Image (cartoon, rainbow, N blue to C red; front, side, top):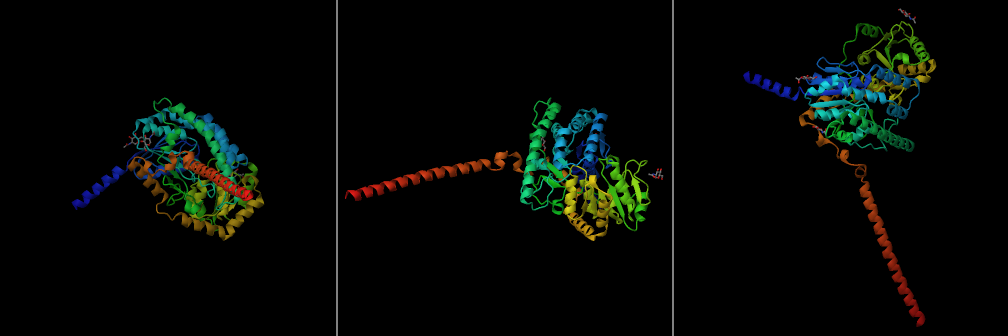
Length: 525
Ligand SMILES: *[C@@H]1O[C@H](CO)[C@@H](O)[C@H](O)[C@H]1NC(C)=O
Ligand SMILES: *[C@@H]1O[C@H](CO)[C@@H](O)[C@H](O)[C@H]1NC(C)=O
Ligand SMILES: *[C@@H]1O[C@H](CO)[C@@H](O)[C@H](O)[C@H]1NC(C)=O
C-alpha cells in the first residue's frame, strides 16, 4: 500500500516539475479571429497546469480561469482607424495581393499600436516575472521578438493559417514554387504552366513587399530596444525562433508540400473536441427545426451593418422564404434586417457548438479560415460569401474541394443566392464530400491540443530546439541554391571547352601542316 502511494506521490512530483512553466503569450493583433486561435493555444497549456500570462489588445472570447490576462488597449484614435480600415476593405473587391500591399503600406497604425504596447506600464510589469518560454501570435509584429531576447527565453511563433513565405523563411522550409501554391495564388495541385507563372510572379511580389516591410520593422525594433548595449539584428532573432505552429493539416486539406520539423501543424486548435451544451434559446430553436437549420455568420472583424444595406435586404428576403430555420449572427439587435418566424438573431454565437448540432445542415460564411475549419471539422456543407483578405482564396479552395458553393458577396442577387442555397441543401454530394473530409481531418496521431502541449513542453525540456532547426535558416541565398557551386561547375566546363578548342586547333594545324608538307613533297618529286 505504502509503496503504491509513494510511487504515485513521486509520479505527481515528476509531472509537477515538467508542468507549471511560466509561459508568456504575446497576442497583440487587433483581430478577434486571430485572438481566438492564439487563446486556444494558451488555453490548452493552462488546462495542463502551466502558468500562462497573456498580453492582448482586446478582451478575448476564449479564456481560461487560470490565465493571467493583461489587456493593453490601443488608443481610441488607433481603434477607430483600425476598424475603419477593416470596414473599407469590406466595401470593395480585393485580391490577395492588393490586401497584402494595403496591409504593408496602410497598416502603419496596426504596426504602431503593437509597438506602443511594449512601452505601456502594464506591459513593462512582465519583465518582473521569470518566464520560461514566449509564444508570439504573429501579425506584422516581428519587432516583438526583442521581448523574448530581453527575457532570454525560447520563442514559439503561432500563425493563423498554413505556412506563408515568412514562416517558411523563419524555419528554413522550402517554398517549392512549381507545385506549392502560395497564399496569394488560389490553385489546386498540380498547377498548369500559367498557374505556375502566376505563382512565381506573386512570390516575387511578396518577396519585394517583404523587403520594404523588413526595413520598416527593423527601424521600429531599433527604436524600442536600441538602448540595450548588444542588440542582435531582427534577422538574428528570427533565426533563433525555436518553432512555428501553423494552423493547418496538410494531408487532409492540401496543398501537399514539404514541412521541416520546426513547423508543427496544430490545425483546428480552436475547435473543441467536445461541444458545450448550447444556450437554452438556441438549443430549443435547433430542436424545433425538423427541416434542418442554417447558420449565417459574416465574421467577427466586420459588423453585419458594414455590408451595404441592399445586400442585407437581399439575404433577408431569400432566408425568410426558406422552410429551414436560420440562426443569424447580427450585432445590433434593435436594428435587425427584418422579422421572420424562421430567423433567430444573436450577437455572439457559439458557432462551433451550433455546427456540431446534428440538425445544422448548412453554414453561410464569409469564408474566414476559422469558420471553414469548424464547418469542415463537423462535416457541414457551406455557401461562402467572401469579402477580402484570404477569404476569396479560402472560398475557392472550399468550392473546388466540393464542400459547397461560393458567391461574390458584393454581386449576389435573390436568384443567385436562392439557387446556391437550394443546390447545397438538396444535392447530397456536398454533404458527402465534407463528411469524408471530416473523417480524414480527425485521423491523426496527436490531436491539435496534444500537439501544442507535447511540442511546447519539448521546447521547455530542451531549452529551445536549435538541434531540429533546418540548416537552411543559416544559409544565404547563394549557398542555399548552390549558386556558387553552379558557377564553379560552369567555369570548369567553360575552361575545359577552351582547352579542348586549343588542343583541337593545335592538332588541326599539325595535321594540315603535315598534309601540306606531304603534298609539297609530292609536287617536288
Ligand atoms: C505566474 O505568473 C505570474 C505573472 O503573470 C506571476 O506573477 C506568478 O508569480 C507566477 N506564478 C508562479 C507560481 O510562478
Ligand atoms: C421586429 O419585431 C420587434 C418586436 O418583436 C419590433 O420591435 C421591431 O420593430 C420589428 N422589426 C421590424 C423590421 O419589423
Ligand atoms: C536564442 O534562444 C535561446 C533559447 O532558445 C535563448 O536562451 C537566447 O537568449 C536567444 N538568443 C538571443 C540572441 O536572443
